[in-house]
Amino acid sequence: MQRNIVYKFASFFIMVAILVGVDQWSKYEVMMKLKDAPAYPLIDNVLYFWYSENSGAAFGILQGMHIFFYIITIAVLLGIIYLLFKLPSDKHYYPLLLCGGLIFAGAIGNFIDRIIRSYVVDFIYFKPINFPIFNFADICVTVGTFVLFLCLVFVYKENELEFYKK
Image (cartoon, rainbow, N blue to C red; front, side, top):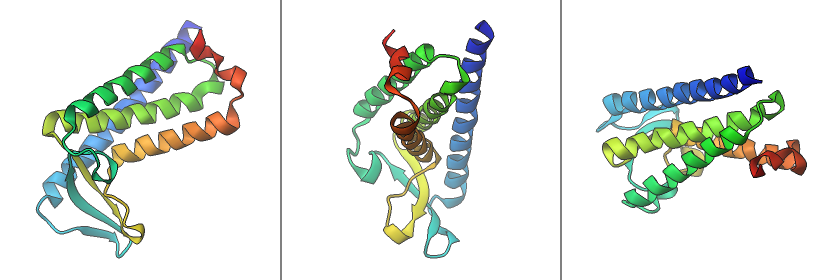
């Protein structure tokens, strides 16, 4: 039992460290190579690397609301850590561990940017639908949230989620 708890926490924080590392590395590379440069097409007229500084949230909303983002991020991180402690160490709950790790890593990645730079570095642009420019951390949060939704709707029964109430 104790071994499973250690494995749960170790795998969570190793996953988070790797994902945050990839996020910060990709942002560093983009800042070094694309800041003050034109967009770089990965797939012409479809997918671009395009340097952008975003002091708001998705779609550029809430520009400059730094304290708000700090509070929300800290609340999300604390909520995930709380649920991590409550999450059973059974393999059946690994998908929830993965979702929590993805969301946690994405939140940390963008939080680091907000603390260090006062803006988030975005660089992935999907042109066909003129989607806002985003980054690897945003992908982590989006994928984690989407898979969590699928798990809660299609995988876990209500009684399997009672652990968080104990």
